Image (cartoon, helix red, strand yellow):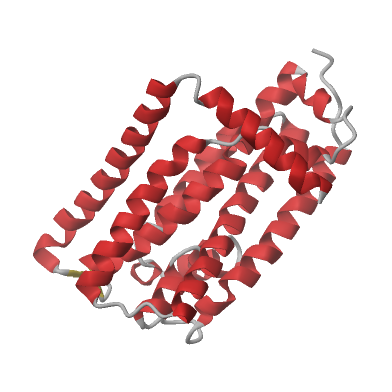
Length: 265
């Protein structure tokens, strides 16, 4: 309970700091909306002639995309700054997280709260409403709860990978480069249904870096789509997969922390 109270105090301080530059804050939201709208338009252009991509039509792909964007929005708020851990290590400023009487992982996570990610939420909500009308999705309480649980699982999976990437900095003093090599390609895979990729890629994103549980498997459950090579309704395991993956990521980060040596900068 003490950590929860402390987290919200740190978050409130971070939000106040960001709102000091309101024009930049709103322009970031507009930029995110424009970026995701551009991706949606690209999907429409791609499917204009062929109508379907691996049995998924345009509106089903938009639904898939909206789930990924929504979970990524929460992930940015909580974990995106982990990718820059190498900067703190090289500058010697990471030491301040070790001399205060709170968990270093928690302190680093609570250090920043990117409220500009509201752009993702606005986009996702609009897409959910639009696609629900077009696909005649009947939203029951069970479906809504499942979607929320799946989003939480997606946040933990993507956040877990960011945490693992940041942990590399304890050994190599590099993490930003790993983000572009690992995280960025993995996220791009979630823009499209896994069924269009080779079987090896599908298995890799299901059991190694489980990005299939971020949106593909949960969306397949809600939309009633088949998932070749995988059990029916595997999407129900998304929250559990997220929790397990994040626990593994946390222990990798703490293992790296135990090897940390200050640069003395």
